[in-house]
Length: 85
Image (tube, rainbow, N blue to C red; front, side, top):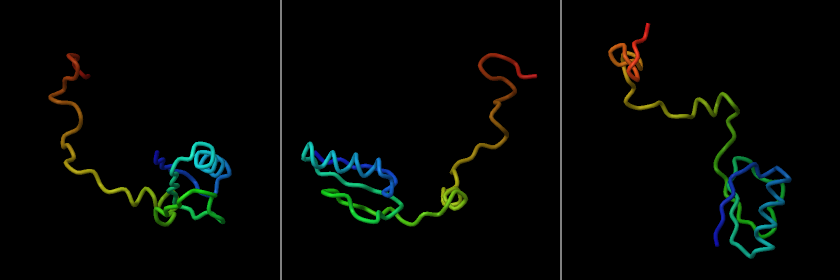
């Protein structure tokens, strides 16, 4: 079975889970992360997802929503059978 873990590669918990899944069960384990580990976990294939942008950089990297509604979320002043006041 192939398993892909998404997590912080520098976390000791991620290292334990990935190495255990590879060694104990004999699965093909992959780890995808924004951070490069100091040393690759034993028996695990590492995939770099890109560079870390920080909180504001991550928010800025989110593409804008398409098809935005205009005029608000209330359709004609009524919602669920109740009148909004």
